[in-house]
Structure formats: C-alpha cells, structure tokens
Length: 578
Image (cartoon, rainbow, N blue to C red; front, side, top):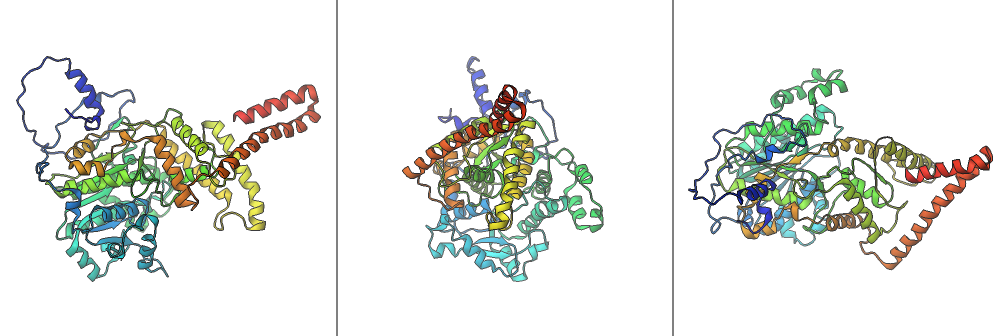
C-alpha cells in the first residue's frame, strides 16, 4: 500500500474500496508482460455520465529498469549529455533551458534552434534570452553552454550548413521538440508546415544522430478535443494520413481558392487547425519512432510557474489565458465567457517541464516498444471550476492591489447575450472613445489601438469557450505509473502532482508574477497602494450613483417623473446586473 494518495489513480481508490469488501485469498504474484501490439486508439465518443471506461484497466507495460537502489537519478542521466531544443525562445522553452542548467552542472551543450531574422544576430537573441531574471544565478561558464543554431523548422535539415548538421549528428543525445504555431486561427497550410512538417524534421534528425538517448515531443492535451469523455494516454488515430497532409502543404495548386469551408472539411470535428495538426503530429511520431526512446507530453492550459525557477514566472503574458490575466489586472478585461461549473484545466509551467525531464530520463534508461504518452493535467485530480477561478483572482487582487489600473479589476462570468451586450457596452464602446486621445496625443500602444486588443480578446474568448464547454477528462494512469518508478529524491524535486496544488496560492503567485515580470512593477503592496485601492473603490461605487443620475436626467424630462423615474431605475438596475 502506498502512503501517498498520489500513488493511486482515482479509479484505483474506488477499486481498493471494493476489494476491501472481499475476503482475503492467496494470490500468486505474476509479472505482467507488456502488450504485444499497441498501435492506436480509435476515436470513440462517450457520454459525459458514462465513466465505465475508468474500470477498463489494461495490463500496464512491465518496467524494464534497474531497482531503485542503483537506478540513475535525473541529474545522472543528463550529465554530459548534449540537448537540442526547438521552441527554446518561447515560454516553455525558456523554462526548459533553465531547468536543464539547474539539473546538473555537468550538462553538455544546449543547442537552441533560432529562426534567422534580418539584421538580428542569433547570438544576440540568445544573449537577451539569458539576461532574463531566471538566469541570474548562473555564471558565464554555465550560460556559455547555451548555443544558438540558426535554421528553419519546416525545411529539410532545418537549412543547416553541413558543418552544423554534422556537429548535431555527432554530439546530440536528447531532443526536446516544443516549437509550434499555437494560434487557433492559423491557416491550415501554415499549421501543417510548422506543427506537422516541423515535427517530421526533428524526427529525421533524431534518426540520424549517433547516440540518441531520448526524444520528447511537447503536444497538447487538447489534441484529442474532437472526442468526449475520458481521454486516455494513447495516440488517437487521425482520419487523415500525416504524410499526405505534408505533401499537400508543399503543393501550391492545392491551396488555390482554398476556402474556410474547405478547411473545415479537413479538420472535421476538431475545433481548429492547432489541435488538428497536433493530433497528426502524434500519429506521425507513432509511425516513425517505434522502438526508439521517444515520449509525448500533453499539457493542458499552461500558466506561470509554481516554484521553479522562481514563483510566478510568466515570461511573456501577451496572449492566451496569461494575456487575459494581464488585462484583468489592469481592469481592461472584466468578463469571461463560460459555464460556472466548467472545469478550467490549468497546470503550472514548471510541472510541464518537470514531467518532460522525467520522461527524458524514463525513455532514456530502458527499452520501450513504442513512444510513451502522458498527460500533464489537473482536471481529473484537482478540478478548478470557472466560478472558483473568477472568485480566486478577484480575491487575489483585493489582497494584492496592483500599482495602477484603468478600472477596477473584476472578472465576472457571463454567457450568451449577456456576455455579448456587456462586452460591447463596457469594452468595445470605451475602446472606441479612447481612439480620440490615442490619435491626438499618442496614448496607448504604438502598433495597436485599444479597440484592436478588445477584438483580439473577444475572438480568443470565443475560440477558447469550446474547450471550457465540453467537460474533457484526462486519464493519468501512465503519468502516475512513471512517477512511481522515479528516484525518491527526484520525485520531490521534479514534482508534477497537480492534486497537491493549492489554486489560491498558485494564482496569487501568477498574478504577482505578471506584475513583476511582465509589467515590470514592484510586487510589494504598500500601505499607499491599499489606500489608493480603497479610494478607487469609493469612486467605483460612486460611479453607479452618477450613472443613475445621468439616466434620470435623460428619462425624467422625456417621460415625466411618474414614468421616467421608474424607467431610469429599471435601466440602471439592468446595467448594474449586467
């Protein structure tokens, strides 16, 4: 019996309760052999209330590793290994680079794929990357291990020179592929070239390197969002052949007069090109990497860090859910679209990185028949509803008032016409009014107007509403099984057990992190900030009184007091409720 509930799946807990009612019997211990032929999981549709699949326990592959007394730690595994990373300049990639440097001082060279840009030196890009606060504790000798290699993700051999390519073939041991276009609205051809063909290029490199220890692909838990019910840790077979899709992307004639309707015929029941091409990439990986040390990590919605490299690290917060939180802190975005009971499956960034390092160690220290797949999610073991999410971030701002804001930060859930009406009245309309001072006095952002940001926010909210409305559930059997064979010291250091995550504390850290690292503000809440917050609250509620006065001034003269005053009161009450 395990002392920690984390060592059991939710299903196992139910099973243990059932077994406790059965009289004891003697059972001969038999070693389970791995399944002889696991290929793909066909797409299935389950009713939301049907959880019978949870008790369909398949034999788990036997663990072909050393005993816990003499097995390698993660630091031992990565010592003297050279790592190739795609997506290294992004949010996840930056934290991954730091984690590799932190894992062992004996880490080898960390090659980071960098896109070539005009008038931008790749060494300068990496230098700027390494100037971020999370790298301050490392000396020049350690940082010198991070080496840029200029290339194009979707091109043959990344367009590397012969010398660079040969160096990678001779020296690379571990490959982390996290580069992708994450825009839900990306054109299908762009998504195929970046997400699918880009994955093929990394696989081609993996097959050519002389001493490959591990290949880790960062996918997404939403790559199977065209399914319902419990999503298991297996690759779901795509309706389309990934090789044919890559060929199609290279044929210009296929894209002449390619309409949005045509795109929908391809992605079928996938919500967007991102999840569609991620699923295709997983299918490609399963076909190409059988018998090789490969793994797929599927994170859900990646937020800031819980603990490492520092609490609340967010890097950039100009898109996605972190973008919403950044706008929320400043009082710019004040509503969310979704059901109160919907589960928002968020995961700390360092949990994703920890699981990726563990998977690198896992597939690199034993023989596996096919790529391993794990989820890095929270919804099944520590669900957070949208209503709870809004309540937590509203309370967090009350405890830690921001330095400055355009309006009182307050996130309220709305749906349907109520959301649309509130958005146009209190987001679009003020943004349109703000265009005048933007143009006259050069206020706001130089590239985009406030109206542009509101439109992007609205579009993103509507796109993400799909994922909050479907009650996705993610199986964690593989993740739990693999965590159980990790060295005890590594299990604590590289924890990704989301069941232990305190969402109140975590979101506190993320919101403070956005202020510190994105807005470059002090995270210290002084008495001046609290007094300013109290004064603004008085003005905020005084605004409701002024609103009623303005409505009354309009309605009473037009309709008379007997009709105008009740009408003004009704309109005011509706706007306050809205």
